[in-house]
Length: 175
Image (cartoon, rainbow, N blue to C red; front, side, top):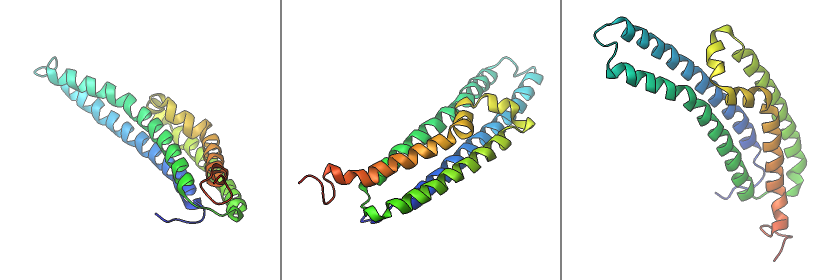
């Protein structure tokens, strides 16, 4: 509530959390796809339930599940960016923390590069070849654009954290 100083741990926490959420969604979707595939094979092999409502329902659920997690990850990434801006705007900070925040932001950028490379090696495993095709948004964010996302998050947080004093919310502004 009455938080003073910079929001440095929140930036690093957000970087790691976004990566972990992406991995979890990807792995759980892969496991669900394997389970649905096995269930579909069992239903197709049983002539009593082959053309029933259970088969149609399973197909509907499987089609919905295949695209749902990718969009959910996109909304979480956008939501995290919005929450970081709100937290930065509501946190009081001294301008002397600006350079410390820049240094930690560079560390966060390095962490983003490392996690992006980790995602690339994780997603390139042959066992995930079918699953990665169903996750174009997650793959694009965590592989190609994760460093840019981290950079944008750090800079927008810097602007909100230290630029708000010119909006009249801290001393030295209007009023």
